[in-house]
Amino acid sequence: MRSIILLLAVLLISSAPSQAVDGKEQDSRQSGIPFSFFADLVAGPEKAEFELVLRNDGGTPLAFEFPTSQKYEITVYDASKQRVYQYSEGKAFAQAFETLKLKPQQSIRWKESWDYYKNGERVEPGEYTVAAKLKAVGVNTKPISKQSALMDSKSLVIPGMNPVFRKINVEGSNGSYIVYGEARPGNGWFHYSLEDGHNELVSETKVATGSKYPEWKHFTIRIDVTREKLPSSGSLILNLYEEDQAGTMLNIYPVLLERFK
Image (cartoon, one colour):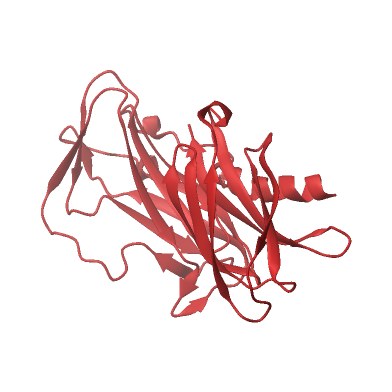
């Protein structure tokens, strides 16, 4: 049972980017111009991470034209089609024409995040829809005729709030990481282990917090993985969890340390 639950926790993060509403990555070459625009998503326990990718798929340079400094929009809708998050809300953008140039086969990536809060309250757990749009109006001085070439839509499953772990942050890369946050385990300790989706890189390790539920206590974990053990592709997932008296894992909190592509 332990391995099955742990695998599900790993898949929660590592598979999130491929949850396309239409079942496939948006291919913007339908516009007659060889470029692609799509969104990758990661639904973590406390925030969603959005990565937008614009790629020149052709053999000649492309110059994307924008009417303002805003390059993209991200909007999240609940099941009733009500907007719960919009990237541009509350932001100011320069009202000046801008051009973004990409060499053949070159890509540019933008990263944003959302903490699952709307108007000061966390939204309900469940399935949401993320709509991403490139705000370009033309390429190489020619208008983009098909607006669908500038859009991608994916599903996002927001989990419930974890009662034991919160404010988790990660620093570091390439095998050396510091993970810190707050915990309030019922017995005064919790465990962690490290997976890459296929192998266990750090076996179960116990951490004593010095306090018990309901008091929150700060903790810091140092993780070091040798270069030989780092995956060439995939994700490093640190799983934080409690155990009951039977050894069953409870309140699992998967932490994405790094994605390798």
